[in-house]
Length: 578
Image (tube, rainbow, N blue to C red; front, top):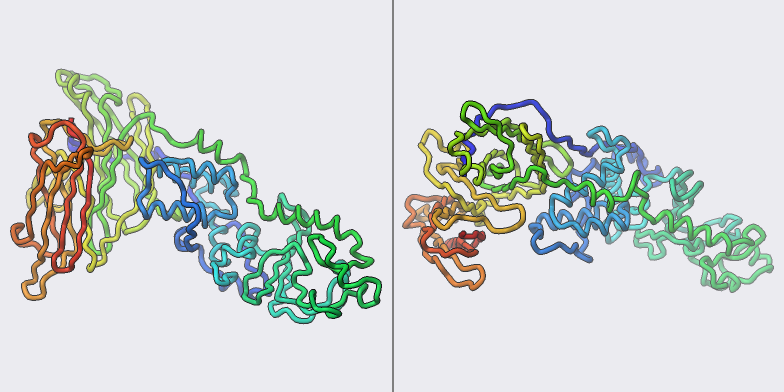
């Protein structure tokens, strides 16, 4: 194992990773005046995240392979994205392709590609389509909600997909209504209704009219094919007659001839039946997700998901930094054998460029890091050295929330390139009343650092140097050699303090069990009195003796029981002894 401190590091200005990211505005439309006389001023701003724009929907959760199951927060984010954020614009093929993805990296890459294919100008960082889409969702939620979120309603659906109509005929209170000749003419009373008119809808048609009616008077206008549905007197004998019925040329019962619409016949609508099929065609096209600009994502996903040419493993851990900031150590592990070496003066040298970027859900760049590293090994030790791995770590402060992490490595001598993209959920440690903990880190190096180095340097968290054994990307447990120490590191936050003594009262139980048989192999307990002068935060640093465990897979659990607050946490981790 090669410590990253052996690398000679120098900052560089190269960019290895090109992100096509989103967020601007496609149209500056406001909703028509009949809805809002000053829509531009009242339209909500683009939401910061998909999770802030729409409410959750519980039907048909996404199926994921067990080995790639996201965390609850990640699962909620992806489920909301597919079921709410893009529900009206994602094609069936894209939806099926998304459900088949097995890793968060693939899902994030899919989402990025999804928006890029719809961007008016894919070569810029701004994505006007995406920004306008989220503005429309926010507007629909504010103006069209009626017992259900506005984005779920028919008006919200059409508004999100096509924007504001070119003209609007609104009758929010219903009441007296003079039918046009094509509906039979004559005076009647109506339920609240609206007619939205679009001069041109791509892939739908020209001069498109969409009618919404609210027969219950509850505000939930639904899209209707039957223009007579708004007629409140339709079933009242001798009331609300058409011109033909009033003159005795037709009877009201002739309206109910079994077609899609119950409009009274007349000289100006003799072709009602044939027009019904035209209306059905228009409505079907209007409710179909718009086509992708280039090609469907099922093909894009199968050919465009990133893979590793230069393989490496990536691990992200979390520890509390301040009340509102989290320290996020990002650890990269590279197999030495995968790098290309150049011999010079008895030394084998590999050169590696690293670039990383963290972005928010709205694609705002939160952090970036880049390093140019050199790894030197004397020729006489090289044969043993290449069988090991080298580790690099970058610790970044971040606020709690959902981020996308992209890391790219370039083998300079061999020109290999590897990349990993994944989503991370930075936890919130700020609730003082909730017992919580950092990541449980399994480390091959765990040691106290000098007082002058506390909190600074590579692999340093607080007063400890903690070098993780990085979890393999294939999902197998962290691996230790039989003669290696297995170090456990974890911090506990928000222990309750006794009002009289000002001290916590908690027990900490360490258990190591055989993963297959569940037989306990190591089991011991300590309490806060034994741990000395501790407060609301406690650092646990323990060593599992290697001679205690035979080769196999094990599960370690650290159970912390706060006896004052009556709260318990029990983080677990798996590892393999070889």
